[in-house]
Length: 242
Image 1 (cartoon, helix red, strand yellow):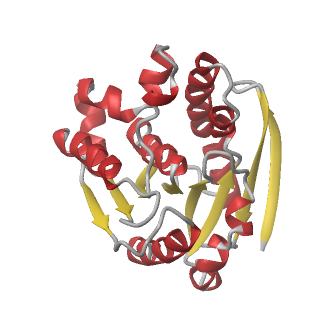
Image 2 (tube, rainbow, N blue to C red):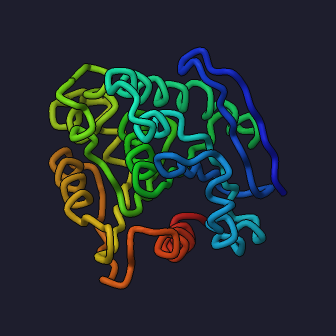
């Protein structure tokens, strides 16, 4: 069962669409790749790949437009993209999460995040920023460091949207205590277009703060591409949900 919801976000000054597949089960918010929209994961058969879990009522899959990612891909002024990255994170917490909880008819339900490439960055950053609502992240073939896209610019917006940069300085004891009860899975292939070093860099930062995480390196036959992610996601979700 598929449903689509849309609204205008004052935070990002864009329209946002939230698409849901499934009827019951643990909510999983899957972020698209950089230029993707909320239905990208259906077109590339990632929804189909987790079809068994959907049919069994173990998960409901949600996806949202890649608002900030599209700005990076369009080569907008990086100062705008940095601002939008941070505003998008705020919109996810303040707009997307309440919409998911309303759909689940549970105002306290915790959400798993997932994503590939820049979608992995959004998935991991969501857990790091808001462990009060996100309980685990699955980052696949993650692109976690966007600093090379800044064109020499830097801002607090970028800093606070990039866990690679803000998390090493983070010292909020109560928030860290909660984060240490969460889990981040960082999966990467070793094939074409992959960069396992990105996942290890993210794991090092998480580990330095005592945040549980694991890096899974898949084979050289697993490229930075949809066939890899279609293999990864159902395997990891099967382990994470009842």
